[in-house]
Length: 152
Image (cartoon, rainbow, N blue to C red; front, side, top):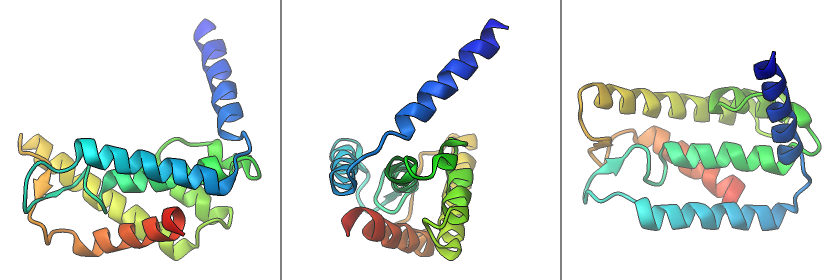
């Protein structure tokens, strides 16, 4: 019983935080600058390789895009707070007319493709970086969405 109450309380606090109105341009700048700091500190340490998680066009960029859009629009569309995983957030963004369905599907494809590749490498106890030309289509989509949502 206490666990259910704790979970309900956590969900209420999470929803309140995520639905707090935010000024769009300020939020956009703050999220973009936070990601740029992460790239500077955690960026790829392997020249001529693409780090699936950390490099531009990778998983972390998708995570930042989805979280930015939730923070930006949840005050008007609280349904965006229902899920915390990226795939379902992208579905909600399309269902709530924030992101068009084609872009949401393309980002979902990029996310699941990159995530699956990263898991496959981890299961083989291999590092999460690949040849620089790998996943070029997915990376182009992520970069285009990054430009659209966080650089405009």
